[in-house]
Length: 299
Length: 107
Image 1 (cartoon, rainbow over the protein chains, first blue to last red):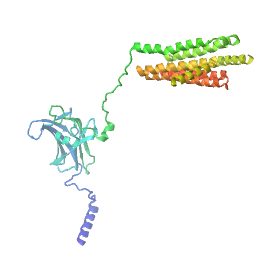
Image 2: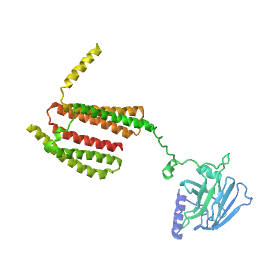
Image 3: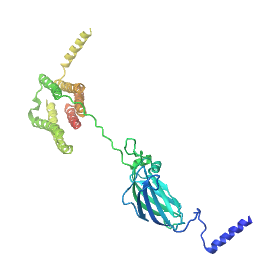
Image 4: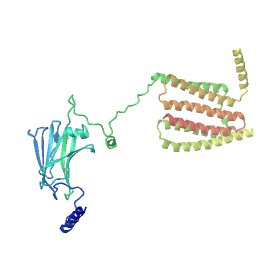
């Protein structure tokens, strides 16, 4: 009650006097202002055996791997980040592996542990498998160290890490996991084979020729029938002979033009000629039929 | 009995058809020619196959279309109400367009 009120008042007075900031919402134990990253080292060795000889890199504070680091299912990658001062404890310590092809949707994140000024990340293929499945290949590695007390968060692109998961029993590499639903629109479509329709069965040439000849038979019968009926050209004589010849010639020309159009001529070239011949046929036909009508009237 | 009746019907038909004008007989012959050609092509389609299908359709429908247009022409001139010259001009235009569409569809 009264004691607590006096304590709070005294604290507020001290802050005003000393011009100190109010404490922030999240208190970071042992935080020191302006933590600096001074060195990044990496070590690739057999998994579970800290003393086994391995490959080491000293990358400075902004360095990156010159070539892709091969992380197999039997090895472990240890990345150590030295911070100054040693008392600085960063709130956010992340080692992020983003798949080079699938992007951010296939990313594995590893939290680091900090002790005595060193932040340590341990990366194995088993832990990557837990997060993104048996997705192998090149991953882009990135270190992120951030804290509210730092003027700017520290990020470093470490380069590429090539991950190989436990192979299958037959020796083949582990298969990539299927695409997630939201990855599908951004990924290339799988190849598919075209299924062409089978060509239709065609008859022998002689059969086709036989039926072509058979198609002309009704024409022959028609000509015989017209002959028996006594078809003649007597009405084409006299003054309308020229109009009759011109009309029938123009109709025959139209039919010839249509055959030429079928064989070779494009539509847009045929249409103007068709229009001209149609106009001529209309004119000569009108003259012919008018002449025939007048002839019938006089008769 | 039935055969006898059929014979009688055919005889009467032949007798009455003989009175038809020559021009109508010519037109009737052309209708029968068009239908017969279409029948031959349909027989080819049924017995041998329809390849190429667009050409099969175009040729058959062209023959049937010609038969229909000619039958229509025959109905108009047979009725005696329309002038032959006017009906013939319509018939020519319709036939030319039918042949143009058929050739376009044959490909």
